[in-house]
Image 1 (cartoon, helix red, strand yellow):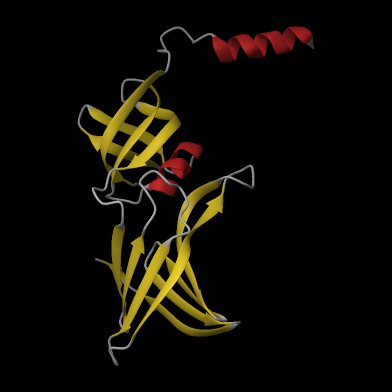
Image 2 (image 1 turned 90 degrees about the vertical axis):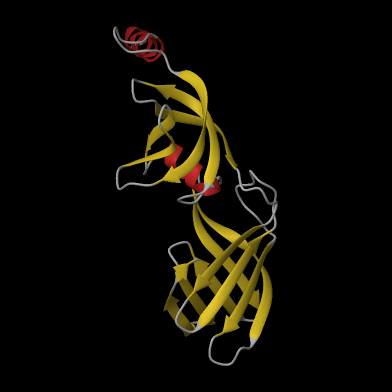
Length: 194
């Protein structure tokens, strides 16, 4: 048993002949997503990573598709495959980040007021305006994330949630606006991020 344990440790520590040792590197650029593989940056200053992996979840917790981001981590291989992440930073020039979602009935403006690099944010503003009546509502809420394998660490960004009394407003990353009064759905519309 002791021999097997030592062999397992040696396999994990000693690189196989022909494989390079992972190196710490940083890439800056746009985040692109694919079904299996995703990337950040372009040309020689780009990293590839598996979309549905711990690395992917950490990157997408801080950055959305087409965001300008900076990622530092361990890279290996000829094609700069990112195998671990030590830091992810959104590179938007503003401390506040604005996103606008247009649905058939509403225009929703989301303002994230947390500093760059925060994975979660408890200071998000929702400004929703009815296309029909022109009436608007402003609410304060937070980001929503799925949890990593440890059940505690926030991983994949899901969207935003806001409450007005017992009415909940949810804006999902894929562009859904859902307004609930308890168990009753008041609004469920798909929109386009502008």
